[in-house]
View 1 (cartoon, rainbow, N blue to C red):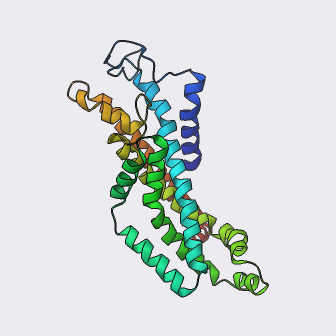
View 2 (view 1 turned 60 degrees about the vertical axis):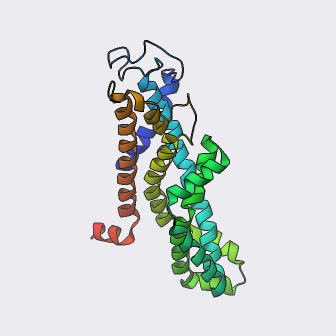
Length: 264
């Protein structure tokens, strides 16, 4: 039920701008209009409709977080599988590299990489992936090592199946449930990371309507028109809360012990 609600909400955010032809970039009225019948959330300092920018901005904020989740999951799985199937010495080296990476503040790594690559949406997505992948690698390594002890994996390896095919054909389908939960749990933090770097000016550049960038642009008008910052901030809070609740629901649904308890 909750998952369907979140999916419908996200689908609406992506479809509403197309159906109602919302333009988040072209000025549509006077500057800094208060919320009213014509502009439900008012207009910004350039006369652009804030509701249109919030709704269209979901494509950048949520779409960027989705790309980050996919990238970190893929990179984390590859590194985790390499460590889990390698000899002990290689596994130890990879694990120590991951541990050292995790000891560094992820926001500092992301800031450094984004500043090095330059200011753009694609670069900030790559920077966050570069900063967050070790956490996924550690989790996937643990999942794969646990799955490797199963009898069917031993049988496949004795039959001469290549370790890469064992990982893709046998292990991956059996850890997909926990992997989905991990990716969903990280999705909220990716939204916040993207908004943080956009707030600092390292993400999408004006006039693109990304939520973190909208908060940054509204700083000068906070005392005069506080909702310019409050509205995109509230959108971020709602999005992160909805994703975290979805992650909890998926965890309960995909947890075998939870299913057994429910059935009992």
